[in-house]
Image (cartoon, rainbow, N blue to C red; front, side):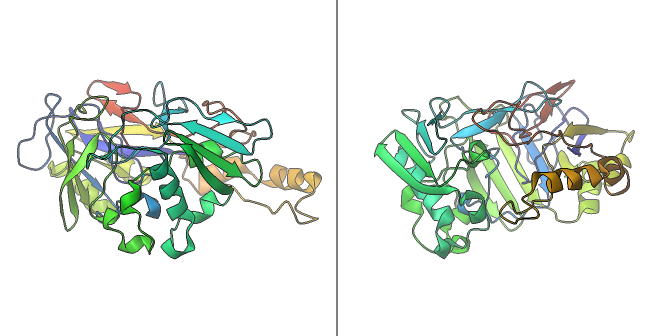
Length: 361
């Protein structure tokens, strides 16, 4: 597990996820200038991130971790605070998935009355179309390999989706975080050419108002079933250079960003800057082919695991920012609880550390 660091202007502590989109739980009213610098809830927040602002297509992987402000998945991560690993709880799903005894069939019931930003109603066909688009070779989706365990998708009725697996998949709950788009906008073809890249249509608490080179302006959806988000306007700016992002926070040009630990540490104690360290669910592992007679041998796998000095890796490779993962598998078997599936979505607001806010990154 490794912490990531967010820096923000005083009065606004915003933690962004690596995907570059976030919904802070509170913000200042910055008018039409740059960063807000603090104030009351309901204003305008400007965030800088390395991600481009022309790839808002869930088929291409945008929002696949369940924390997009534009899209929602069947499940979403939710934590009590930023020190604990979150549960995966229903989002577009009406309840937790029902799993067959053999683990090969996952049945998800959808919420009734959910509508996309274009006014169309969500149904099981939209869910099936999104997942099928991801695994369609024609789409060229970069995340297709994450969904190969799904052998079939059934829609027995408008509010029910059935996922059939070719083998039990302990990571299946994470597959249900994928953002869902309207089936009408998922025409066969390369994902890179989809209109969703620059004209996203989802069910999230924000909708795209304006897109210009390097900047996206999102506005709260007052028709969302949970009500409008706390922050009215969210401005996302693409700034690939991490040093430039740090400087933009120092000058007040943006309200917050995510920086690598070493660079973020250099801003600690600077006037007008708040540094927020949040433990993420980012973990690295070596996958060994179990079908091979050597690497599939439990004794060999155990020996290789014991031979790895995890503490040394954290100290020398990660510069001390991280920790050895738990010995148990970080993916669930049947449960979607935090004890089985770590998926981090931190956020914070002025004066205190906070748990996740609906739709936030």
